[in-house]
Each structure stands twice: as C-alpha cells, then as structure tokens.
Length: 272
Image 1 (tube, one colour):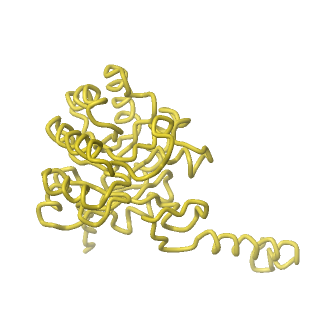
Image 2: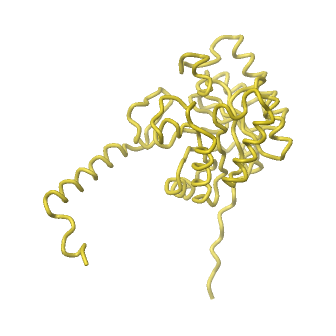
C-alpha cells in the first residue's frame, strides 16, 4: 500500500498573523524565476517576494523604475509555478498605482489573474491610501511598504536611512496605522532606525517585516541575489551574505572553459 505524501501547509496571510501572535519570526526572500523559486520554497521560506528589484538584479537597471507591469507579471507567474508552500507577493511597479486608484485596481487584478500570486505590495502611506483601499475592496490582499521606498528614489535623491528625524518618524508611524486600518495584512519597513521599527511592530497587530530595520520586527526580508553573494556590488550594512555564489559560479565556468579547450569535455562516457 502506498502512503500519500503529506503536502506542506500553505502559508497564507492568516498563517502570518498566527506566527506574529506566537512570536515566531517570519522568513521572507525574493525570487524572480521558476528554478530559484522552487529551491527557496522547498527550503521552507514563509514568504517569497517577487520584487521590482528584478529591475536591478535581473535586468541590470540602476533603479527599480524601468520595470513594467508586463515584466512583473512574467516574473510573478514564473515564481508561482515553482511554489507549493510559500506565500507569494508581487510588487506593483512604479506608475501602476500612484495617483490613479482605478488604474491601481486594474493593475492589481491583472497581477492576480495572470500570475496566480497570493498578494500584491505597494510603496507609500497616505499618498497611496486610495489605491490601497480600492485594491482591498476587490478582495486582493495588500502588503504595505514604508521607510526607504526605492520607487521614490528621485524624490529623496539618496538611499540613506529614512525617518531619522522626528517629523518623518511620526509620519511613518501614522502611515503604518493607516495601512493597518485600511486592511493591509503586513508591512515592509526598509532602512529605518531599529527602535522606530520595533515601536511600529509593537503598536500594530499585523506582521512587520524589516530590511535594514533591526531585529525588533516580526520578520526579515533580503534580496536572494544579495544574500547568496551573486551580486558583489551591493554591500549595505544590513546585508549578511550566506554564500559566495559569484566565486563558485565563476570557478565552475572557468573549469568548463578549461575542459572544453583542453579536449577533456566531453569524454568517452559523455558522448553517444
């Protein structure tokens, strides 16, 4: 008699709430393609973010601004096909939700229908609240993003730590409450003082995920290519590299080149 293999429990927004209530930290990573999404999912990560950082690490752009909705949908659908357990969140790219809530809803619906993802993520607080509320009204889960918001890089002019001044810190706290009250299931806080991030995590009931926001939040997110050491140019203080795939891949490719040029590959066992 065959024994059916038990499927892993699917992570949902409700599961994330349970993790926060239990005090269990949430592990979140980015992924942009089927193959790496499979690996990240099988490793047991809770949330996979199909980030607009694909603009940087996949397409080579300097900022996240150039990536399009169609491109995000392509990456999102590729990731979803490789995932069984993780909650998949897709970033809404620049220009698809700012200033026009009807366009925001249309964009979010396209993402959900064409990728089969679990949720979308938007950057900003009160400025995009109307878009957040309209998307939520359609039953689409929304994750917020406050602090350093890369889509606003030309407004800030720098990737420095945000909300260090009292006025900006107060606005961030107010925006976090607005997003929770609107119905967001979680918020990413990027590159803000650890104490401020901890305050937000304590005041809000929804999970708060940090990236460069200290260890007092409910979980952490990193860009996969950064933490695996594929990307060597990006070295912020908050990044911990868990591997050096740049060196390993470079070495493997070098060995392949040597074997081809030295007539060692393919050998007798590797041909028909």
